[in-house]
Image (tube, helix red, strand yellow):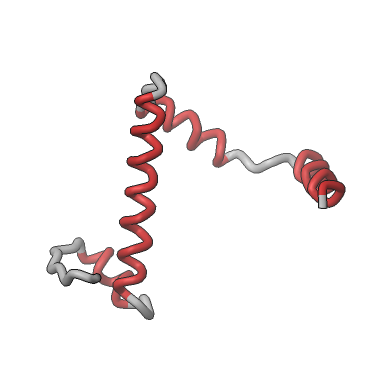
Length: 83
């Protein structure tokens, strides 16, 4: 079953959606990603792990750092051996 909704969006979001071949699919994917993140946060909270904005910022910084070429090559080598 599907339900039709009417929403108000910022101009930049509306412009991006206007460029998508399937607006409903784009919105559904974005909302489902948000739902998954909220679910993960709830699971972590129930396990006694409180995720803070400072912790998120540290992970964003870590993820923004490129993986060293030698570590990436070693990971690929290990994956090739596992297959």
